Image 1 (spheres, rainbow, N blue to C red):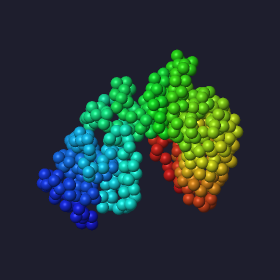
Image 2: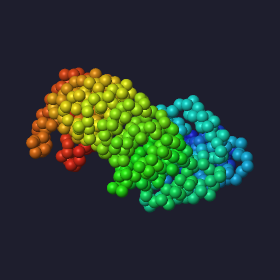
Image 3: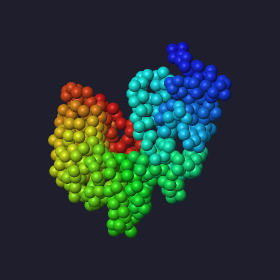
Image 4: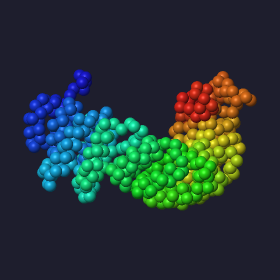
Length: 470
């Protein structure tokens, strides 16, 4: 601790009290509520298991955001907290002082701990107490006496001892504990692992689910019934989905999947990477959506003009804030179809990604009027397309009036390359200087990045180390 930031007296008092752990535990009955968080933080830092166990039994707040303190999982301290919960669960009547209803193991709650440690820059006392009251009112009528919140990432053979212990503990107390997972990422292919988790976790608590492994449509169809039980999912992310030749005509698998989407009444964010089964069938998916989407991402697949027509006419995009069609070839599409789509979302769209879409001068020129009407647009990216300097300059002029636009990603102009597709760095530098001058003349500060395609550093079509131009 530096001289500029000396420890607070209350923190020093907590450390001093913990020198005699038995005395600290006996003092809990007389401690005011505001001293509990500093003492808990000190006990957690010093790994005073007996004190932690006792404090859980007398915790005066509705929520204990333990995950905010666990930068690295530590099984001994977790066991101490769970042992304290065991004592509570064994009692027919809670101790008078204890208000605990939720144990939060997610990486949240920093505002709570910052507040009680003396850092008042994050949250006010009144808002903190309002939040605690809100949490109490929401949980005191729950079916189980205690709820536990956790975010899960299911990987192959990477279960930590803490997670293994936690799951075993919860499974033995299913009638008394509700394990709620708001965010779930599934990387593991192990059916046993997935079944075990879904046997313990309350599926209707899940709000975000990500299937992050290459899979077949048939595999997705088998997972669909579980997905349908996640009735409160708001965000669904599906990794590359491939179908074999035998699945080309497997309409039943697609039907199994889309029928479960019907059950997701709160879905707002849908991201599918490489969904080859959607070609010519996007309307079937859109019809399953219950409420308007905020964000839709369909990338690295083939779509038909009919698909794009259905998307632009769907009432489910009336509130769309994010649209990502990267890797969907638009080269031969009728420009009016894409124009119509952009016009439909012009009043709400905040982020637009059209990377590697085969867009060339004629198509982009046709889209410029519609793009210039996207008044809420903040981020626009179209790297990996073949655009001339003249058309890029025209685009920059027409979008200059978009006051919300803060971040733009464009391909290196076509003139940067030789007839053999070789990037000329000197020519690119010259064109960038001309673009800089254009932006200076327009007068509004803009952050624009120019990305060579393919990137001369890593060979990828879209890269992170873009050249800052403004």
